[in-house]
Each structure stands twice: as structure tokens, then as C-alpha cells.
Image (tube, rainbow, N blue to C red; front, side, top):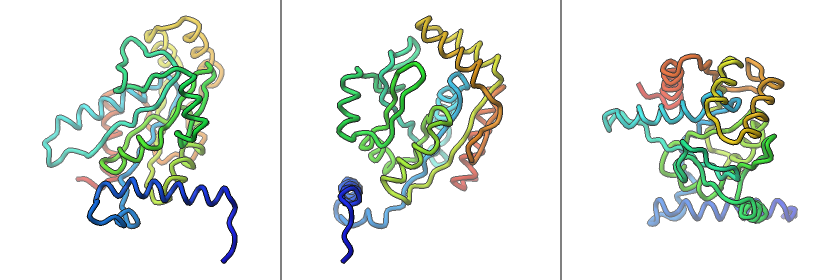
Length: 238
């Protein structure tokens, strides 16, 4: 039997551990996870201020208003953040807002399948256990941040289980509208200045990564309708 590296051994052990967590969905058949059909993950990428969270939240609101038989089985994945909560945000509903010391501890101990630091220095983490528990119940829709996270996020998800289906969506809007949105958002003046400078210098119209879909967000209602159509196409719901 060929020897495997210690790193590969740990990866296999991690998948075995996550598999045991999946057993909780069918405790009478503990090997069910070996043939588990995962729900789909929809990752929304785009510049800060492009409307990622707003479109996701509007999509989920519309979903809840549908008759139960035609309602999508969806949950928004909540990221772990070191930045301050904005006035319009709610803890747990919009983010797990924690101190950097705790974030560093979680990161050091492998709690995140992916994490990144923004130009502002604030960090964002994607918690593995939270992700798995949500995914075994429902489809996940999540914010992926900027396109620089494209490879890392997908690699991170696939490191958990290769069979998790992923749909990637790029959302964008005109530069002037993004800047207007960032000013309206308010908050720390220095932070807002950095965000605006980033958009001024780094904005581009079309995605540079191989996204599955693109949404041009000039009208919120139309953008949400586009997202609904994408979900219909991917989940084959008529």
C-alpha cells in the first residue's frame, strides 16, 4: 500500500470527521453521508457597494412570500467578521462580528475553510462547521466578496467535499452608483475614504474570472428577478 503524506492524511481525516457530522441527518444509517447528495451553493461576487447583500436579502424575502410548495429551500451563509457592525446590520443575521483576537484563534486552529483580509485590514472568515450544518439542510446563498477570492473560496469548499455543486455569480453596477452607495452607507470616515479610493482605482465592468452568471445591478427589482431566474435554471424549478 503506497504511503501518503502527513498533510494528505490530515485531509482524509478531516473529510472523515465532516462525514460523521453528516451522519446526524440520518442517524439510523450512519454511512449515508458516503452517498449524500449535497444542496447547491450560490456564491455572489462583486465590488463593495455593488449590492450583493441587498440583492441576496431581497431574494430571500421574496422566497418567504411564496407558497410553501413552491418555496426554495435556502439559507444565507453568515460570515465571521472583524469589522464593526454597521448601524443597519444585525448580529448573527448579517455577520458574526467578533474581535480580531478570537478571529486569529479560530483561524490558527483551522476553523475556517477560507478567510481573507480586505484592503482596510478587516478580516472575513468562512466557518466550516457552520457551512456544513447549513448545507445539509438547505441550499446556501453567500457573499464571496471581490473576485480575488474566487479560487480560494471554491478550493476551500471543494476541500470539504468534492461533490458540492457550486454556482458563481458576479454582480456589478456603474462606478458612480457604487460610490454614491458607499457615501450613503456612512460609517467610519477613514474606512469610507479607503473604500471609495479602492473603487476609483480598481473598478472594472466585466468579471475577470470564469463566472457562471453576471447581473448588472442598475435596477434592484430587475436584478433580483435575474437572480430568481438563475436559481430556477440551476435547480430546475419551473
